[in-house]
Each structure stands twice: as C-alpha cells, then as structure tokens.
Image (cartoon, rainbow, N blue to C red):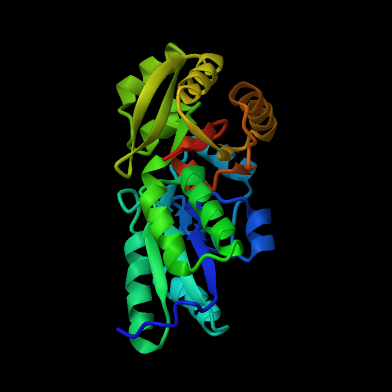
Length: 289
C-alpha cells in the first residue's frame, strides 16, 4: 500500500449520523457522507432528495414504519475522490460499526483508493453516534486548524473516543416499538405510565441507561448524571428531533447547571430519527482523560 507524505493537507470527513452542525461543517469544509431512509413506498431519501423533519415525523406518528440505510459505496467513493483530486488526504470519523455498515463501506472504499493512488485515508470507528461522535469531528477539525498532522489527530481521537457519550431522551415509545428496539407490551405499558427512557452508547451499541417517569424528570436525571462527570467544558452539544425551542431551553439549562458552553444545538438526522421519533433530546459530552 502506498502512503502519502504525512505533512500533506487533509480534509476532515464524517457521515450524517454524527449530527455535526451543518453550518459549522460548511464553514470549515467538513465533508458529510449521506445515509438514507425510506418508508414502504419505494422512495429513498437522504442525499439530494429529503423530507423535512415535520413531514417525516408526521408520517412516523401516523403509523408508518421508517427504515434506515447506510452509506452508498459509489457515493462515498465520489466524495473521497473529490478531496483527493485537490491534493488532500482524508480523515473520516464514522457512526458506530455496531449500529451501521457504513464504517465497513468507508474502509472498503478507502482501501481501494489507497491501492490505486498515492494518498492517505484514515477511517475511524467512533463506536458512538449522534453528537457524541459529532464532538469527535469537532475536536478533529480544531486540532487540524491548530496545525496537527493527520496522524496526530488520529491518535488523539482513538485515545479519547472512549470518553465521549450522549444521554438521549426518547419521548415516543411507539417509535422504538416499530423500530424493533422495544417490545409492544413494554411500549404500551410505558406509554400509559408516561415512561421516558434514556439511552446511551456502550461498546458501540445503543443501550438503555435508565427509565424515568415524565419528561421533566428525565431531563433532570440527565443533568444530575452529567454533573457527576469531570467534563471537558469545550466539548458539549445538544441535539433534538423536531423540537428546537425545547432544545434551546435545555441547552440554556445545561450551560447554567453544568457551567459549560454548548458548542452547538443541532437537529438529529432522520436516519436516527427513524428509531427515536420526534420530541427527543440528547446531551452529548466528553469526559476529561
């Protein structure tokens, strides 16, 4: 395998499931690989053709089941080649390999390209998702801007990625049931009892963290849990599913209670939204090493 000069410029890339702020990504030239979703009508969404979050969640709450799909190899190759053609190497952070095949796809395309031409493409399995992985992308870009090499960025992310997590509050249990992440009986009982599960990532998998009665109690539980962690105060983000005003309110509470600065507030992409439904909230953070 041919390797490129370690001092070459490089582009930070990621996939849509890391929920990096799109305005930040555009300003910083962070390239985002699309993932896809569909209902049972044969229409594939996620790249040039998209649904608005309100339209998507209206269909979801109307009883339709949505399905998520990973990255398309041809599209990944196209986006990789566009950066390589500019003389830049690639550092790419991907949604957890335990939840999607996109990491394997990106690795396969990277291997093919490195065998075809002199370049360096580093693909990192975040073992995380949504803004927890998005904060890794943010850290990688900030390190790049500070003058670190691709290899230095890779080593830092690989060393610290275990310190990233997200506590994700799900408001609609029926979406978890239709997505196969909760059985129907538990979903029905939980809805009656106003149960709001909090999920997080563990060894790359989405697992239950705790169940709370009521959304306010769930939000309080997230804050109290994170208060006990030693946070990197420069790496905190809030995400939501079609409830921006509540996310802003929650972010203000996070900044006040945790004495941190929220790096960004962003809408969760709809490939993850297929499982969570609307009105979810997530608090992503990184603990100090």
